[in-house]
Length: 316
Image 1 (tube, rainbow, N blue to C red):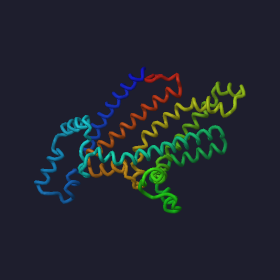
Image 2 (cartoon, rainbow, N blue to C red):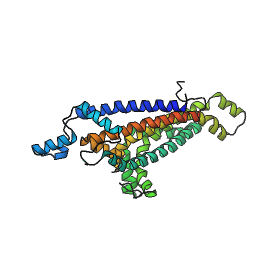
Image 3 (cartoon, rainbow, N blue to C red):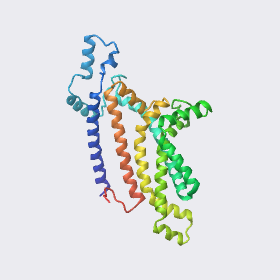
């Protein structure tokens, strides 16, 4: 399959996923208890004239299908709607917060890749007590909730030792990286532990292959064997897990952003759900879905660079 055909196929799948997801989210929001009027007019409500004006302004009395089709048409024209609570375009809300979430996810992805691959490779090659330590730490990392890790990091490194700030994103550049380091670590612990396990298993499996044994018998240096014959062949499952992990980090950032008081897409999503801000919830969820599909498409393309025998769109 050519790259152009593969790209068109992926775009078609993305549009279908977005359509189904948007419909489901719209339906689930309408099934949730409560009314957006309570957040617009306050707990005491308003006069009949105010209620009528707000209802007409946000089309709250229109049937679900009518509102959904109208929203879909606006999205196709680049209009994500207007927030009921913040009284401003949803696109502006997302643009002002996307940078924080993007930086957090990117830093967490780097930590996951570096720590997970190095720890798993060392555990597989060294064995013995090193393997036991890595396996034990991986089990602890996988079984500990993200918010517990976040609170522990704040208590130890921010409050106790004073090495890191407790909240906020800093003023930009290195200061932002310094503010986001603890949140990124909290976000990456479980995923790095899982990637370490996958890397360990993949390296162990490749180490006993015939071509690796042949290279060893021929007297090739151990470093060359590990780089060219073990790690490269083990990169397929590692890349798959890493891609899926990165794609789900945005959803995992919801908890971390609330623990560390970060003004990102995750905290915006939580507030929008609690306040029944339909347009914001819909837009953030669509961003999550787009990110997931795009990252998986990139992973599929990377397969062809890792292993030339794999072709785009191949079922084998």
